[in-house]
Amino acid sequence: MSTNQSQEGFSHFDAEGKVRMVDVGDKAITNRLARAQSLVRMDGSTLASIRDGTIPKGAVLSTARLAGIMAAKKTSDLIPLCHPLALTKVEIEFDFVDDETLVIRSLVRVLGQTGVEMEALTAASVAALTVYDMCKAVDRGMVILETALVHKSGGKSGTFDRVEQP
Image (cartoon, rainbow, N blue to C red):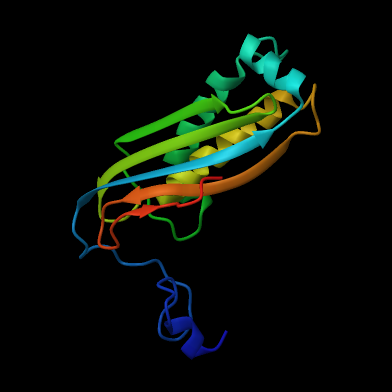
């Protein structure tokens, strides 16, 4: 990447094209919220076992919820240049949209100087990975599908709402 390319639109590069952590010190402290979701497609009998609580490893959704919350709190340890944030809320919810698809939805809030999109995406992703881990003994064919930012609000860039929901 040339120096000119690195300066245009990429805040994690300095004028010389070197990677840097963005200085958010002068940004306003605002309420920021992000929602993300991941889809997990699996065999219908696996999804039924999750609903019934009969997966051999235990309570799949409770474990995935805890994993997602923990992941949101550790995002800055996982994603280079991501700011550590004092999150004020993390929620993980599940929805059975059909006989083979589980939707995992995350909501993350912070009162801060930078957004929580990465925390919401990480929460949904790790919750999906946890569902896979807990169910892989009965269904290795599971697929983690689209993980997407669904909504973000707060900060200078304003509100984003995904038009087409995955």
